[in-house]
Length: 232
Picture 1 (cartoon, rainbow, N blue to C red):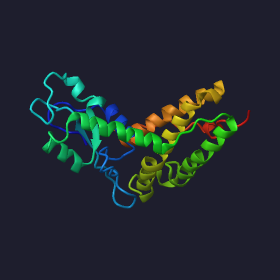
Picture 2: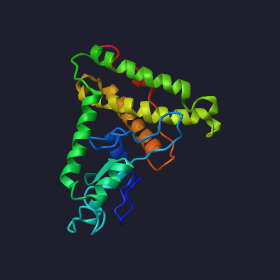
Picture 3: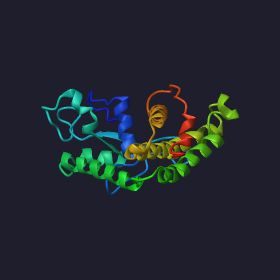
């Protein structure tokens, strides 16, 4: 996944942040290729974390004064497909660091715009926005989640489908919920804010388990989220 030239290897948390911000697509504006396999086509991801400034002196776009710890930082990495990663490193003069940073910023802006998170003025309006997203996640969990009978068989077809659903639907939906709630935080009651923080932890654990380097058990979805913004 990461560029292995030099010792500038990003942390698991940095990897998670890059995949999260990129919504699982190549950041090159002319590419935007999905980096995860489609359902029924195996289980893989082809995303590569490319260094904007070289991972080591003498590499593509070198900057000798750049500290080692900064070479593997979020700000010095961009998520690309293998083709675009190879291209920028073989022709570094055609792809300077300013261009790569522009790709990254523009891609993140497109994701935010595509998500279409609104500001609303009432709790009823907030509920109308959230309810179908929560219902979609709940339906996926009920049909494919680990609480079903196949949970003792990690090789079951349902387990593979569940992983695809989590990455392709539940994680993006949950990210949208968090963005929406944060944007309309003033409409929440105090007790609801505590519930949202539990949900935020659940989301972080879900991302780390399915996109990170750990098989740690995720915290449970707080069921009170299904009643968020209900009532005056």
